[in-house]
Picture 1 (tube, one colour):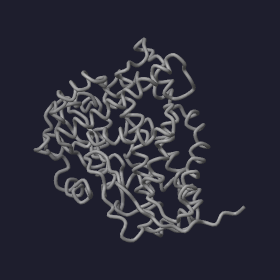
Picture 2 (cartoon, rainbow, N blue to C red):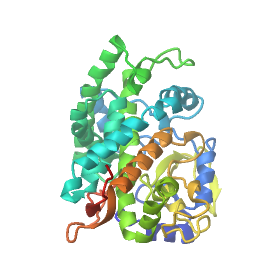
Picture 3 (cartoon, helix red, strand yellow):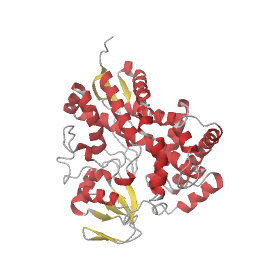
Picture 4 (cartoon, one colour):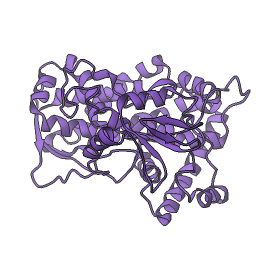
Length: 404
C-alpha cells in the first residue's frame, strides 16, 4: 500500500470510511468531510496522548534518550490548547510573514544556483540535485546551520522519518534513535552559542524568546523535539516530496506543463496547490479519541488512535471532481487538506508555498521541455506510513535559451 496507496484509499472511502486496522488497533478516517471534521474537533480528537502508543518499543527508546541524549518533549503538533496556542505564538512570531518575505530573494537565487550545477548536462536526478537541497538549505539558513552540513542533517532527518513511518524493526528503530541523538549533540552546541550570542536567525528567536504564559524560554528537550519534527522535517522533507512529485506529474501530463510554461504567473502557484492535493507529502497523521465517538456506524472507543488520512481526503470524489486527474483549472483546488486544517494547520505552510512556487518557477524559466530518462526510473518511494517520498527521479531536459 505504501508504494501506491490510492486504490486502497478508494476502497476505504467507499466501503469502510472508518476502518479499524487490527494490527495497530488504530482507526483510519478517509473521507474529506470526515477528515476535516476530525481536524476541527480538538475536544473529541485531541493531538496529545497518542505519542508512544502506536509503537510499543517506546519505553526502550526512551531509555536510550535518557542514557545518551535528551528525551524529546511533546512537539507543537502533539500539544493541545492551551499549551498548543501558547507555544504556537512563539512559532508564529518566528515565522511571521515579514520574515518569510525576506527569504524570497534567497530562495530564488538558490533555485537558480542549483540548476546552474546541472543545466549543461541536460539531465539530473531531480530529487538529489534540486528537491532535497532547496528547502534543506533554506531551513538550514534559518536555523544557523552551515550549508556544508546539510547532507549530514539530511542523514539524521532521514533516520527520524524512517521511525515516524512505523515500518522499522526494533533494531532499525534503535539505530534511528541513535542517529537522532547524534543530531541532538550537534544542535545542543548551537543552542548554547545562541544563548550566549543571539543573532537574527529563526533559531535564535526560538531559543531566546520567552513564552509569556509559561514565564520561560523553551527547554533543551523542547528545542530538540522541534529541531527534528517541526523545523528540519516539517520545514524541508514535505517540500522536497512535493517538488519531486510535481516534476513527475508535469512530465506525465504534458498538457499541464504547456499551461505552466505558457503562463507561469497564473499557473505556477496553482501547480503548487494541485501537486499538494494529488501527491500529499504527508499522507496522514494522528489524533486520539478523547471519548467514544460513532462515525458511519463504527464506534471509536475513547483512547483509540485515529489515523487522519489527508491524502485519501484529497482524492475524495465527493469533494473534488475527477480527483485522480491533474487539473490546474479546477475551481476548488485550494481546498485541499495537505497542510491539515483548523488550529493545527501547518505553521510552515506559507514558507513551503513560497519554496514550491519559486522552485517551480525557476524550472519553468530554465527548462523548455523535459522527460524521464529511459531505463533509469522505477518510481519507487521510501517505505513510510505517514510520508510519501520519491527515492529518485532521473529526468532529461532541453534548456531554455536565455536572453542576454
